[in-house]
Length: 377
Image 1 (cartoon, rainbow, N blue to C red):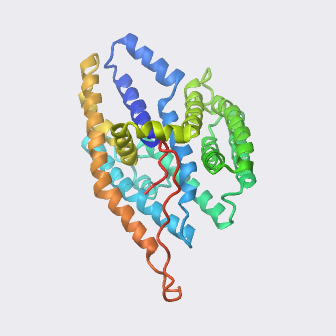
Image 2 (cartoon, rainbow, N blue to C red):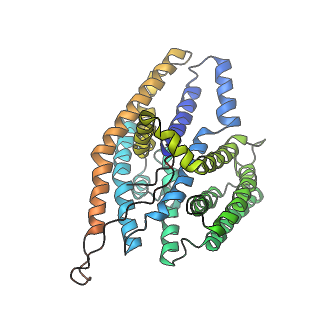
Image 3 (cartoon, helix red, strand yellow):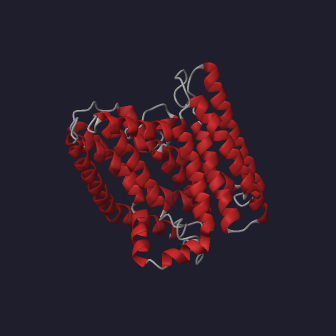
C-alpha cells in the first residue's frame, strides 16, 4: 500500500503545480493552492521520503543468494533500467512533439546511465532525481553486505549519524558560500539507512536496534529543519520553506505508525479483500506510475486553459487515467518479464563452480506487514 500511496502523492504534487502554473483556477483557489503545496506541505517530498524509507526497509534484504552482491546487482538492473529506458524514450518523444528544446547528447547519455546528478547534468524528467539517490544507496548497501555488517546495528547507526552530519555540514556550508550544495543526498541516504534500522527494530525485534531506532528518528527530526532552512528555498531568498520539512517529518511518522501497526493492520486489511487487492495492485505498478506520470503530464498540458476550472478537472481525469493505464501495461509487458529474466540469470550456474553446485534460487522474502510490500521484483 505504501508504495502506491507514495507514487500517488508525487503525482498529486506535480498535477497541482502544473494546474497552478497555468492559472486555470480562480485566483483565490490558486493562491490557496500555492500556500498549501509550496508553503505548508510538500506532498511530493512526502511521497519521495516514503519511497526512501521503504527502500531502506526492503532493498538490503534482497541480498539472498550465495553470491549476494552479484545477484542483487542483476536483479536491480533488470528491475529498474528497462522500464526507466522506456520512460526516457517516451519523455524525449513528448519533448519533440511539444516543440521543447531537445536535451544535449551528453545529457541524454547521462540520463540513460541514470548518473546525471553525479556528472553535473540535469534530469530530463524532474522525478528522475530520486533514482540517482537509489543507485547510491544500492552501492552503499552492497558495501555493507560485502563487509558483513548489514545487520550490525552499531555500524548502521554510525553510518546514519555520519550521513546526517554530512548533510548538516553541507547545509551550513551552503549558507556560508552562498551556493546550494547537495545536502539532500546524504540526508536521503541516511533516511534510507534509517529504514533499514527500523526493519531490524520493528520487524526483526533486534534489541540493540530497538534502543537505537528511537534516538536516530529523533536525530532525523532535529536535522531536517536545519538542512531545509539552509538549503530550501535557494540561498538568499527570504523566509523558511516549511513544506519540504513537514513532508519529510510526515513521511517518517506515517511509516513508523504503519509498520508499528504490524499484524493488527494485516488483520484489518485482511477483512477487506477487495481493498487489499486494489492497494496491492497499485503498489505493484507504482514504479511505472512514478516513471511515466511526468511525460503524461507534459503531453496533456494543452488540455489546460487559463481561467477555465473545467479544463483543470478534465486534465486531472485524463492524466490519472492515462498514467495508470500506461503503468499497468508497462508493468505486465516490461517490468514483470524483465524481472523474471533477471531472476533466471541469477539462478544460472557460474562456470567456475564445481559440477552440481549451481547457485540456489532467490529466497522467498521475509514476510512483513501487509502495508509495506516486502518484495521488489
